Amino acid sequence: MHELLFDFISKYITLNEDEKEAIKSLDIFRVVKKGTVLLKEGEVSREGYFVLKGCLRTYYVIGGEEKNTGFYTEMEGITPQCVRTNEPSEYYVSSMEDSIISVSTPEMEVEVFEKFPRFESLCRILSEELLAKEQLNFDIFRTQSPEQRYLSLTKNRPDLIQRIPQRHLASYLGITPESLSRLRARIQKKE
Image (cartoon, rainbow, N blue to C red; front, side):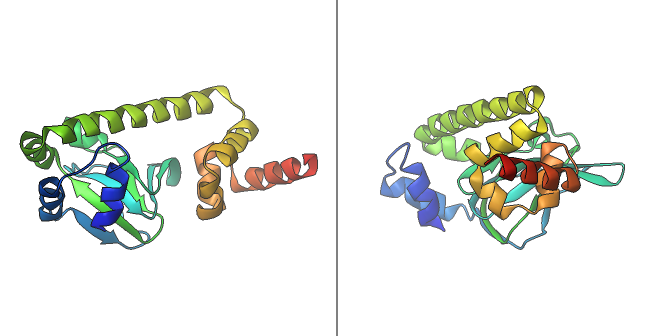
């Protein structure tokens, strides 16, 4: 598990042995089964998640129906808003697959940043990348039709098309599973 994280970090900075040992000593890794709810609406959590293997999703429950808002796969992270605000979460976070994740808290981050300041700049870079990606996803959702959103998803995140059940993809795209089936059939006819 450590090596997966170290390989990812090495794309940004080179870790020395002290830094690797510090990460190992944190006991941050968790194995979660498919369907595990990590955060429920109304709960306050201090945990952020980074996916080493598997898939997490965020969703709201509105009128008894789940509305998916994000999927996080290998080498992607999510810090629920409640971690920073200390207010109850408005959404859920759960595992779509058996997953290996790292879990951190703001207190843990402060401790690590004090000992190893380079981690703070690494986290800033990763946060900026995530923010830019989330902004693009938001813009796509607001400006494109469901078909354009689906085509964008197939281009930018083809892994999700194979990994995520159709009902969850449809919810994420803002359409019904039946509409997604028709949309896919229409696209196939064009090809």
